[in-house]
Amino acid sequence: MAKPSRFIWCGVHQQRKILESCPKCGHFPCRGLTAGQIARIAESTPLEKTVTRATKRRIAPMYFLVKDDQSLEVYTGTLDELPPEKAAEAVEALECSAYIVQELTWVPAGKEKKVKIAGAGKKALCVLESSNGTLSLTEADPAERIEEGAKLYPVDKRLVRQYVPVKISLESEDSSPSKPPVTTRKKSAAKK
Image (cartoon, rainbow, N blue to C red; front, top):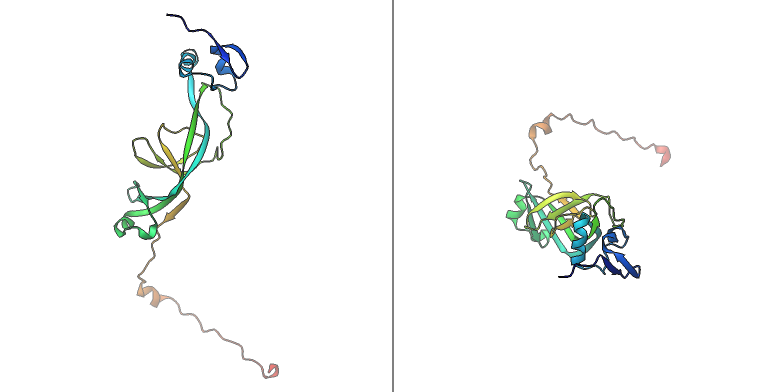
């Protein structure tokens, strides 16, 4: 069996290059590399996945209902149509109309890939749906890598249930000091 060649044809630089020098290139990993060649590079150079792009995919508006025990439940539909038993359990509703898709690439360990991502460095309230289906509320940055197969839903609106007191204590009404009557000035006859 023939030993694989150390040299490959580089389509970017239009010349033969040593395969192990590819991670130093600014275009790494390029389209010219096969999965087998990337695996050979990974044997000599430690590689890690990093986020190159984070894009928002629009979806129909949906709600995540936060219950008293801080668990989350997905609800599709409008809040006007929310059944009363679900409304009684929910403390707040989080409206989401998009989810973030992260595109990953291989980069040598320690080397930072300079990629501009909209919203990078800004943490925002998000709902993280892991690959096994569990939901959690977290503050996340779209440029930070999340678990493989997970979805990140940025929260558009946070709707909180408000409690309005209905009963008024009669004792507090009676004990409050009465206001002195407001006196008005009489109009003078000269102004008429």
